[in-house]
Structures are given as structure tokens and as C-alpha cells.
Image (cartoon, one colour):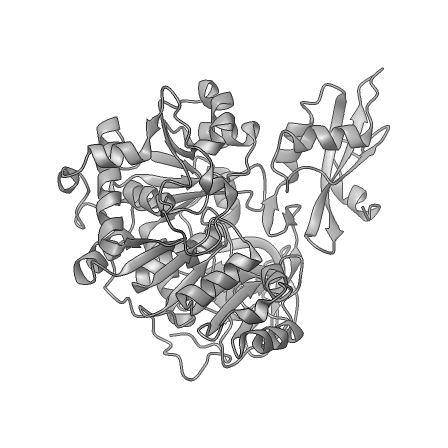
Length: 553
């Protein structure tokens, strides 16, 4: 039950699992048995059925087992939206191994760090990203690299606009495996390899998502099959996603929110997802028109861009019934909702949720019949949210700002090989988020900002220490400190303060260019300020707050 005052009357307060309490790979198997020919993915005109996805993911599990991958091993994914992402994700999990997504925008240092922290021997990557892999593979424990091209599943006659990268010639790299080749090579042997439902339990680890958390460098948040099932069920039931829905998936699957709505909710509900490699406003219009999409999880700037397409009125958007979105750069307001309703002919646009990687996201949802603008909605099923004084731990009254604490069956098991960081964040089943917020008189959550120093750039988490560690590798930099500064489009951007080595001369623009070549675009500093010294305590600890107090970017 959920006692929140704002809970919608038409929605059952009891969460019911549609096919029972079992891992999502078992949901895939069950849908493949019940509705084998039903599309699970539509990819620019190529249809992948539930039966085909089940068979291909079984084959991939078989191949991994042949490489020596076993239950509990970590397998990294370095690719973006594609049918191959679904195949690899479920194939890894069917074997009892753990999926760990790496952002496709990673540069070499970032990829090297995550692969080494995972201690993984197997990487699945897009062939277009092999240049980054090649630079780090000898600095890691990697033994097996499996490549795939985004165009591998492209139909001969696409039905909607196709990004140029899907038409790029396929790369064959010596010393690597080709995913399509291995899926064909193991045909027929898959049933003997994948784990049964008795072998794969809800409490086994299924996913390791890297996050900066509230302290330190990126850490692997350990999430179980139970965490994934619970959040998929809660998101589907709370947002009323059913097996007849056609979801439009544009948000990256490697991001926890994109994975939840685009991959897990789809398979949990037995629905269909229209999968796009990346966002393009015209292609979104084509996809909704051609495939009669009923559901979309978007980012607010996407909706604005779609409404600005010339001749947008040529497309029939009447099938779209639900649209939840996230405010990144552009705030999702009642005015934007009204504009979207008018543009689509009646589809509402409301805030999606509050959540974080450590809880498999989606800790709140916005009831469609009781939208409250300026909030992140009400706690979802079986979820408790508390607001406390971060210094004393005292409970805050409704309307008072404090630290947000979350508890529900989606809460992670801790950080991979980081017991001290785990103890700091996870206490007696409560995730201490490091975020500021309040609960209003109706139980709606209002997010206000962060207590900690983590920076949010267009929704991506950036921790200062990680950027500082990369910037200090510049031959001219002796000291560096990083903070976030406000930005009207991205929420925040990175600003770096540097002290140069003696007899070294380099401009701020040169440092920015150097950084953009070596780290993800959202982590690279937008601003650099050269100083003679940085503020520190008597013990030598950096005082970032003094930099932040005096900086507006």
C-alpha cells in the first residue's frame, strides 16, 4: 500500500507482478512462448519479435559461456541504442553474469577506469568505437572484444529516416569477434547453456551502473534482478503501460532512465518499443506517425525541438496518448504541456520521476490525473521518502527543505568494492541521496538541488574529483579544482580553476580544447580560470565552496 495523499483514486495502491516475481529474462522467455511473433523492437523498419530476441539472447549467452564467462562475472557494454543492446543485455543476464554499461561518449581514460574497476575480461562494443577500445585494451584485463555495427539490423528498405552512422561500412578488426557471426555460429546449442529460473534468482546481481554517487570517483552501483523487476513493474503500473502500448525509445539505453523505460518496461509489459539510435526531431515525427506510438519518455528539449519542425502538421500524432518527460536544460512546465497537447491533438506531457542510479531510478511518478507542477510527483509503489536535517538526522516537517532519503525494493546492494562509500550512502535500508528537497502537504516531492559537490550537466552526473584527475595530466597544470556553475540550457556546466607549473604558459582556451579531446563532452570544462593559488584549509584540504561562492561562470 502507499498512504500518500496525492495517490490517484483510479490506480490500485497494490503492486502486482504481471507474470509473477521472477527475473526479467524469464519475462522475455514467457512472452516468447505466449506471443512469439509479437514485435518487441521496431528498428527503422526491421522488426525483432519476442521469439527472435529470446533466441538471439540465448545464443549470445551460449557464446559467452564458451569464452568462460560464468555467473557473477562482469561484462561491459560500450554501445548505444540498437537491437544488439537488447540481445547483449539479456544474453549476459541469462547466463547469470552482470551487465555494466559504459557511456558511448567515453574517451580512453574514462573507459580504462571503468573496465579496470570492473575487472572485466569481456567487452561488447560498437565497431565505430573501436578506436577508443584499442587505446586502452592493453591497459586492462580484457581478453575478448565483441564488435557490432549499428547497421547490422538495418532493413534493405527503411521506413523512416536513418542516421548516417547506420549506413557506415562495417569494420572487421583482427583479434575481435563479430557479434552477428557468433550469433549464427552457435545456432541450435543455446538451450543447453542458459540458466533456468531455479538457477537465476531475484537476489542475484544483474546490473552494475557507474555513478559518482554522493562522494568520490565513479563507483559501480550493484543492482539485482529484484531491483530491476520491481522498478519495471512500478513504472509500468504507475504510468499505465500495457502490452498493447507502442513505446518510442530515444533516451540512451545505457542511461538508467532510458534502460528502465525503453528496455525493462517494454519487456516486462510485453509491449513494443520503436527504437531510435539517437534523437532527431523529424525522425520522431515519422516514428509516431508510421508506427502509431502510444507512449514516449522524452527529455523536455526534445519536445520543444519536435514542435519546431517545419511542416510538422503533415504527421498524424493522434496515436500518442502518454508522454512523460524530464526537465534537462528546459523546465517542463504547465505552459509546455499546453503547447504539447495542442501540437499532438491531446497528448499530455508531465514530469517523469525523481530517482537515481542507486535505486534503479523511478522513485516517484506523476499521477496523470493529479499533476502538480513544480514537483517530481508522489512516491511510487512500496516507496518511502523522508526529508531529514543532514547534520542532526532530525525529521523535517512538510514544506521544510532537508536531505532526501529513499527506501524501497529498488535500493541497490552497495558500491562495487567500496564498503566505506556504501556505508556512507546506504544506512539501514535508506539511501542518503545527498539531494535537497521537501515533501509538500499532499506528499509530492519537490527537488531543490544537491548538498554534495556532484555536478549535473544535462542530467549526467559529473564528480569534480574525476575531472580533476584527468586535467592534472596536462603537462602545464600543477593544481586543479573543479566546480559546477549554472547554465540556462544544461542546468550546470563544469568550470576548472588551475594553477600552472613554474615557467609554463597555456591559455584557458587551449586547456578547454585539450580536455574536449580527452574526456566526454559533458565532463570537459566549459570555463577555465588560471589562478596563482587555490583556497585550502590549514590541513591542505581544498575548499571548493569558496570557489563556488565567488564564481558565476
